[in-house]
Length: 569
Image 1: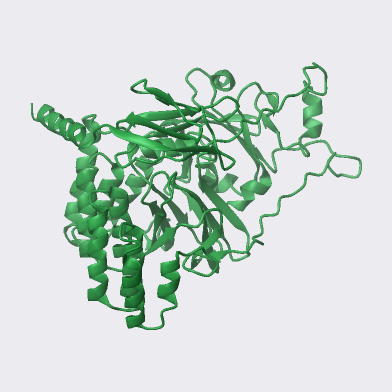
Image 2 (image 1 turned 90 degrees about the horizontal axis):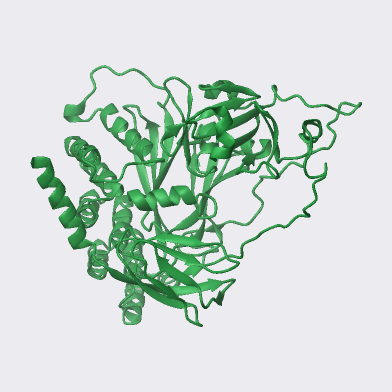
């Protein structure tokens, strides 16, 4: 009865605080308005079409899905959230390459021909059932080449997010590569040998190509119930015929992953800053800065980010705490009960070391979004900052209970691993009553962990990690690159990703970001938490908050001296 009562109260609260709302926006293609686009609420069945200016409006509840379709365009699907009011949709032409319908050996090649072409054709991979050609396989088959693989200093960082629907990690305790597709483990096909377990350390650095099969048509031959197959070709295990001079039949071109483009400074140089912020930066004195703020206040009276930008300037640059707090109060009044605006405020406060104030904001967001996993994580970490680990632990216990009772959606991708690392780290540290009396050194000690969080779930961006040798690897948080992950984020209510840095590459790393927008005209705030000596009693952390507003420009966030390579979990 107690469980039923709790469930009823939770559901009533959810329904009462998440009513129907009007969603509107403009639909464009290549910058031009797109009329007659079909907009459908897949849950209610409501349908409308965009007008000649590309404008539309439709009713939806949070967690309902809107689908945008137009002949010749890629379909776009968006899950509505509690704060969703404006969704500006960009549609892209559907690219369909038509080939000649002629059954010949040029199209349907034999195994011998595929073997000869392996070195020069990146669409071919060797499996336990012969060579597979991505172009003629009959099912979805994505292949990563050696050059792309070598950009990632760790195997699990490479896999997660690059193949739809899968998550991966190298288990630090037994060195096993753990790969899951929608919560289920996969089978490995290594150089034509079917395996159920492989070690990260023995295989990484020796990989030539990787492919993933998830469709029933491709997995059936591996056994009943197999949800996915990870095909790995190693450098030592894939021997192909050579020309008489020892060279491959055709040399593949290597991709150049050295950073050569200009990178702007997200804080100013090269970035497109609003005029009021330029004036504040150029004011020259505190009094002049106050005059600039007051002169712009009437114009930007209803623009919350004007107040947040101004607050940061007066608090961080002018060191005018009292004056800055007055501006922050104005921002808080404008933010109201908007969790996206409140989280931007919390990020800034946390980066400034104002933990008490950020905690009160996270608590407000938690009350607004009690069903979001991110609310639990933010509140728990905030309690840790206030040296209240017991309160943090109780939050994770509550989240686990709600999952067990079926009151929260269960994870099918990365969230469970993220929360597991947060909980493990909470109990691993020397924190009051949670003190560990005897603790063994783990592989994670002395590493650096980067945790990225963003306040707007619609945000799309690339993170670029540039190593000391000026080579880079990119993690692309976009609908085009990782639609399954973004869908999972919206369904489960989280917006974070973490990267573990091990001891392989010494020197200065540069962390850059390219912002692609959030379906509105508002900026997105990105919080980066850097954990030094992660997992040890020497663990420390620093928090950075960045405003992403300039679209399509690679911007430098910060530099980090790390004795490590990058591994994504």
